[in-house]
Length: 216
Image 1: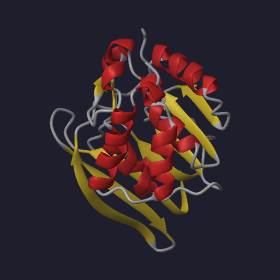
Image 2 (image 1 turned 30 degrees about the horizontal axis):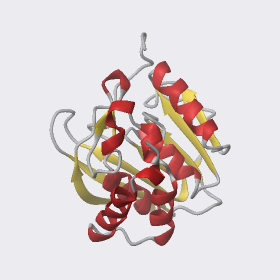
Image 3 (image 1 turned 180 degrees about the vertical axis):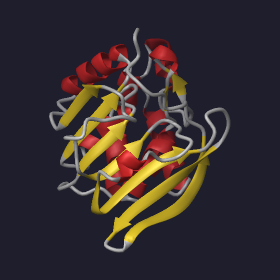
């Protein structure tokens, strides 16, 4: 089913985002423009626009639309920004980022997810996105720096090697807390004086795991 076949769901999708406080017009336009149904399993396409997370391959999930929109809004993206995403998953968040930023590097530890996301992004002509198979918690030293960093899996604490890759004026957002249970979205901002930390909202994400998966 394509997005234009279920306009009531798309209308409710946008209304829900607005009701829950998403006000950045560029983010709202982008959420409407990116066809979420292409990023979920075929069996779940009828529910693609409900405000809930959905399972994808390799035991991972595609985040609920509100969380995607909220994290994106908190990044305060501009076209000149270079963005790092840890945890490609379906590729949906990267597709959203691609329309608002200049360049996006997204890192995924599961080869199957990386390959599938790359194909989806190419189909949508997201030419400013690079999908890399790798360990998002242990990146090569030559990658970076970045204006924005988004972590889309739960970490018990924000890895220092990610913080070090932030440009001055840069923003990092990540779900921080126990792997099983509720985490809190944390936003770090690098200023000339140091790092500013702000707690945002409670969320639930699958855990960020080290290494590249040996299978899948």
